[in-house]
View 1 (cartoon, rainbow, N blue to C red):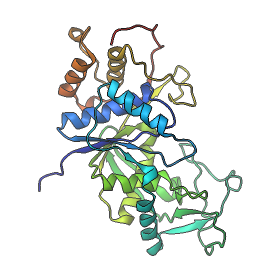
View 2 (cartoon, one colour):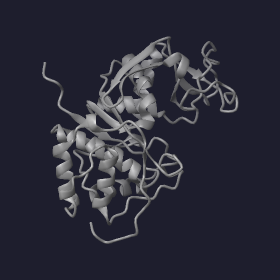
View 3 (cartoon, rainbow, N blue to C red):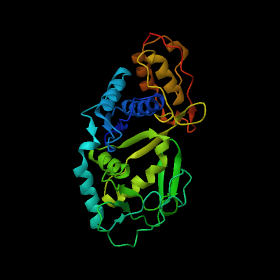
View 4 (cartoon, helix red, strand yellow):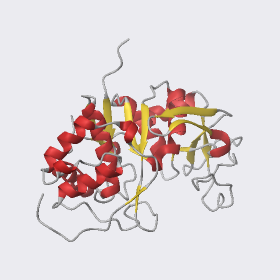
Length: 307
């Protein structure tokens, strides 16, 4: 059988502008797709309506265009996909794979935590009948399984879902669908075959593979690129006051992102345009060269005007 045509995607949350860390993830995904002659999609993960905005989404799209990361097809917005997520939740309910949970954050404050600092759900509501109150979450009933997968960068990995995660949320108590369910439904809907994203999502992968199995959906290949941190070792983010990508000096920023991905540009490309640098990177992309360790961002240079 011929393999499915390559379909990749970049799926940011529109809560603020792109920074160097998000550029590294977007660039890796874009290069992997372009080097394979595949399609590259953009999806806005705007499930959390109070934190996301159309203005932020528009800014992200403009930044991608400015940096030469063009996408294929229409942008998909998760905020417009509730019917699809509800259908998936109904499918899980029909097979008894989910249960209602009324636990609050304060009630779970003393629950054990895993290596990523996440609460390992202790199963409090597992055997309770469905509550009459509308204010409850829906959790997937996790059986005693060890999830195995091969990451294209990190190699063979496994996770004991029951011991290290526990029953996880697929619909929140406030009525919003959770990331884990939405990403699985949308990757299948868009025909995504390759997921290239930041290493902060590495240990979300077993949960998503578990859901794919329950829903009868295909499992894409996964690759998790290194995080970019500040000098204090904190992941670049809106919370750590990461500066937005500059619209000038784009070539230098792209070169730094490529170096973070294990693809430093050769000296003969010094002084070339951002477009020429992307063309070189597309021709020389090798995902096996991408490192696993986080990368510290360089201090921001003085502002300049070249592209």
